[in-house]
Length: 414
Length: 124
Image (cartoon, one colour):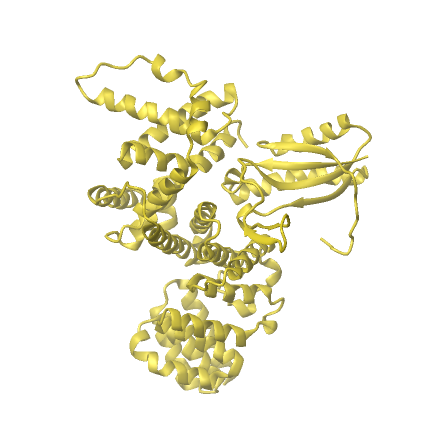
């Protein structure tokens, strides 16, 4: 670790709270971000000499506020430059701010900052990019790498997203209870998008994309810190932890996908699983079920099975059934069919998914699952046709390779 | 004499560590812990997961109630502990300094242990 490396971590940790408070103050995202940037630079100069302040977020907010006001004055022609002395004395500022901190206001600030990123006018990819840039503070370069696009393209995407947000009416009043809960739900969905963008990957990109999964988990913990009794936020955090725990076991040495059943479970991250299981247990105690809780409960059943054969597929089938009732969707029916195939056999599963062909005809997993059911039923010819469709629709080369492997197995067994 | 070295740090900061940074720190701590084990000075060591995963049982009423989150809202959280066996406070402080050198940030609270029950049934 470099001498000032610790400052980077401290600044990153304080960023959501600080930028959120600055946004409330300046009501302008660009000014808030630039002011925070300036404060971070001053922290790099000041903290190694003087040691970190007692409340780092409060220090950064105060210094950034002054820097922002300063630069606004400098850009307006009528005002002369303010004397440096006005901003350089920070000694008692900190104590004052600490006293003035109203944690509830900060919570609303952070929620607002996250909520701005999930503006309904923004397409999902822009929501994700914006959240990573303004809330997480990842560099455009890091985000571009995770999205596998050029830095210039990502810069443009973020600029466009910011412009849209700036033109939209950002609500600065304290939200009502209903508005607040709507915002939490929108933010949760956006965080899960960030996670899935990172989780949908091939082995070659896994390193670059892992940062998205890690950021999604970090922001989800942040949201949970603000709403510590919200079962759906607990469950979302649990769901991401339980999925991310498997990342080291998802690909073999050749970069081929290893399905859940075949993964080496000793490579699953025990800490992430422990945290995830604790969170889902906490959430269920509230007896207010929701979609994230059901999905996390399914992930927890996989995590709790020491070996694939010990997986409680019956319980998983029931949970998918509940999820289907809460959020009817052919994709969830498809997932339930996979559980049915394990619990009761491929014939029942195949019968379940045949009616989905219209809706899921261009969905990779539909044909992959159908091929697997047909294989199990000994219908190699039909299985091959399904697998061929799947290969054509694969999202990543690794997915295609995985299906080709199943086709090879068909050939070998005949 | 036994002491507990209680590790406090802002978990927002430790949760912002990259995996590589986390691994590097754990490796360096491992070296110190290994030596302390050889010197027969180290007892149980635990690292606690984030307080967002915590639950509190308030037992100051009947029946006790279960609440989400840690017992106290503090700027720094209890994130782990070491039990060490040392002849003097100075010796514990030396160990704490050594641990702190490879894992800077936050604070160690050093507390003498009153009772120590070795429940070896819980294997690591």
